[in-house]
Length: 162
Image 1 (cartoon, rainbow, N blue to C red):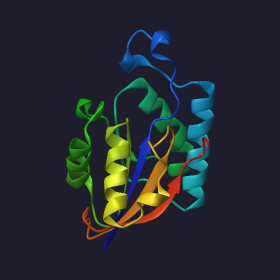
Image 2 (cartoon, rainbow, N blue to C red):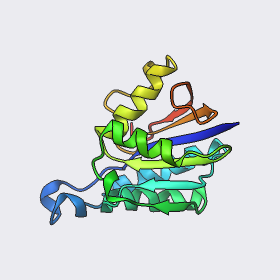
Image 3 (cartoon, rainbow, N blue to C red):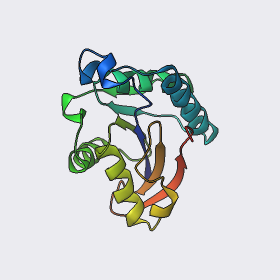
């Protein structure tokens, strides 16, 4: 049985100087629009999420809020460990959360989220289909036979912010 994994970077956030601290940085109007556009593109693929792992920062939570109308109301977990998590930490959290026949959404930060997406794309010879640097509001969808992160299939890569 396959599992589906959606890896999304948070949308465009306000400048660091416009927030009290990095954790409290929220989305810009463009960021809210980009996240909603990504949600529309994911919904057009027929995706809904069963579980969402979301970094607890304000910008990732706001990004996730833009996804809910299109991707359903998944169970949400927001452990602090996801805030600026490394690629390896994200891979470990994903492995622990995967379930057969379910869709897992992971909303996080670069460089970890982009690194994780590129690592999976490299494993299925699809790295050229991912944008360089994994821009804000980018989401990649992978199918995982038997929840195996070592043999993913890239289903789609959505980059709506140009």
